[in-house]
Image 1: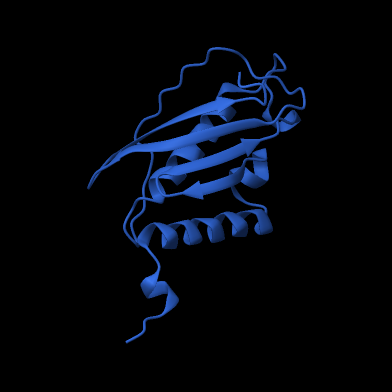
Image 2: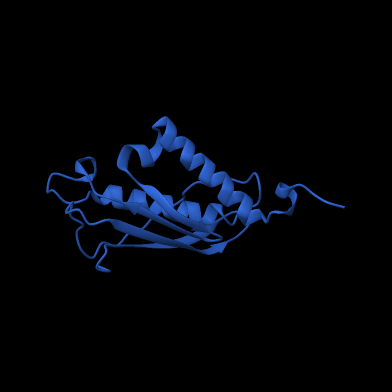
Length: 139
């Protein structure tokens, strides 16, 4: 007895493939935060996601630093993706709450920002995740 590839593939692998296709579609069609802010997926795994952002004029505020809302959007995107990879087929999510603590500003100085997100717990109706943004120097 043999099954199709989709039947033998694990749920996280199917979710990662689904999310990758959606992200690719957004880039192709010029929609979503990837297209508008330049947020790009670097890697996805079960319960984890890594996204990157190359700060641009579209991401800065009046003080010429990366806008805090853009940084929270980067974190929310990564955390949501990390959670998405843990959900059952056909299940979706929405953010209920986000809390961010900024310890330094991010400057549009050509240094790529990397956001690493991990699912802490994914329950039946809520999930929690955490994320950290660093520059190439680990700051």
